[in-house]
Length: 123
Image (tube, rainbow, N blue to C red):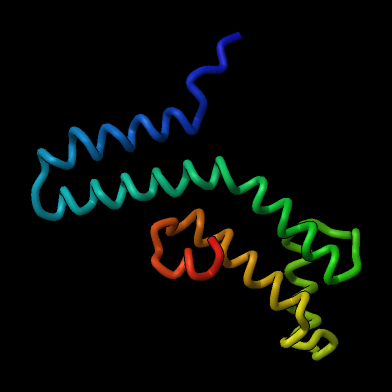
């Protein structure tokens, strides 16, 4: 069974084609939309590469700060929101603050890895 090329490799190949061959030949709105498409492919590739680890780390942190092993990532995020809204978890709780910071940095690392504030935030 042949498993190559992987989804990430295919995405990066199309992205590379757009950036190196197609975009230089295009003008105006078409060039802009091709750059948007290349950027979207880059985000999808990073999501495939980094997303599972990022989600696992977020799930671990949620289980820790909520003291719960029940529920998936969505359910635990809803529970976190419920506790913040009800006041049973303080918004200045150090565990919450650390979790939100780490979650945000992980998401920005996927969506906008060249964002200037990412390095300042520890990304």
